[in-house]
Length: 136
Image 1 (spheres, helix red, strand yellow):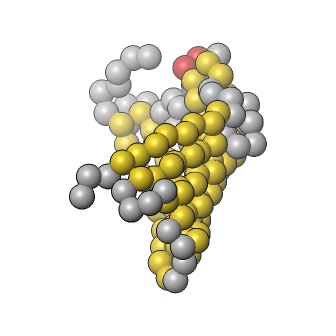
Image 2 (tube, helix red, strand yellow):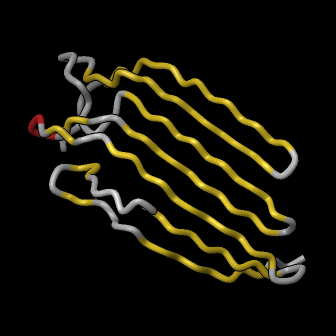
């Protein structure tokens, strides 16, 4: 990578959010052009479009969520084309009494093979669990 003198990013974001009852939802659509202002070339590793959708369902004191990210293709150093991809993450939070919570998440739920930099494959499906205590 090398620094450039000036970047120019133009675009728009359309977002929507809903919070009601036991459901919440957020979505954002981004369309952008990120260029090197000196020569007009596309900045590396920047998708021109992306869409994020985040849904959460509260079930009593518990919570389940799903996040989906769709990213368009990108160019990398040396004009390597990086394909677009879709990622999904699943999260859950279980109340274990007043102060304890068990958090679990599965990242890259669909086990998507993708790269954000040419030649560097990103994380496969992974699962995480943590136990949390909140001092009150």
